[in-house]
Image (cartoon, rainbow, N blue to C red; front, top):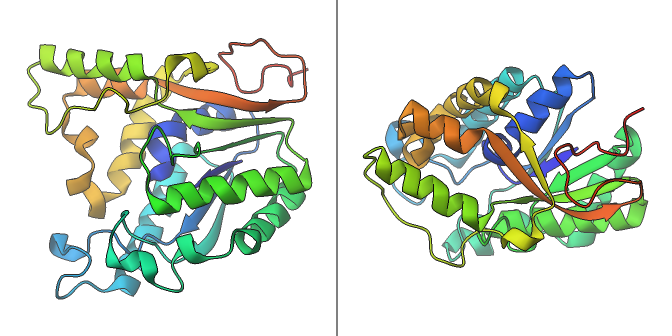
Length: 266
């Protein structure tokens, strides 16, 4: 079970493991917490601009999510249906129905019920910063409710945070420079997960094409997804590995893994 904040979040950090594990016959469950209302509308209309229709945006983004799920082969999709809070500092953060304002215990109880239903051996979500220092309110809230649900149910044998290794970020940006890619930004030195916290790096290179297709399914947000504008060689470099930080392990597994199901397989 992977727990993500918005439609499209499922692809970059977990799309490969979801495709790989499904192909291996393992049931995969994606929980998406919000409907993505604060994404771009038709014609690139931004949230808060005239003509931005939250309900229409949500409907389109959930349709794109289902297409992405099909590309990745995910077994089950569960929607919590909360309202997208928008980026940190936006006026939408204070909307009473925004996900970030839902009491943690309320949302965690719903997620715990899904864990009781599916009985996941492995659960994955973001770290306390929302994923490598991202800080989006909905990512942070997804972290909070997942930790609470894991603790209250005690069901998962293994629990992970997605990770963005700092050394990997530097290597990727250098590789893009070497390829002549014009970078829109460069990460700060403290962006990403310190390498010493990364406990698992999974090779998902056979699933890069599926990840790219899944990301392209989120067409309405294409302007915001700079990875889709990278050369194919750079995309393959970026998408071919997924990294994680293990927080709970109830089975015998190595300290550094290349498989989230290490210690669980027959």
